[in-house]
Length: 102
Image (cartoon, rainbow, N blue to C red; front, side):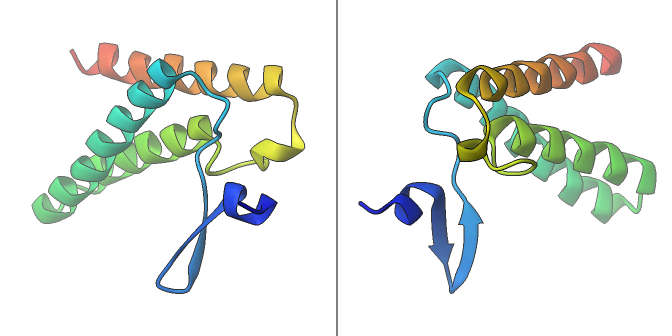
């Protein structure tokens, strides 16, 4: 596997950044769950015509993707400690969104 194969996933000719492979499985699982709920929330909010809910759901998607290393500074360009901190910070913020919704 080449370095590019470790960093990028190509789907239908479009290149997508892969999830940081050094993140703990538990962290990836939690962030992926938030990502899925965010994407589902975007669809539901768009169907309902609720712009505020769309914005909140997109925020959840963005936070999750940043935490996974799929957005923001490329994970291979920052230290492992900073990558883990970014994931933990994103997860804390996402969990806080859940707490605020309760």
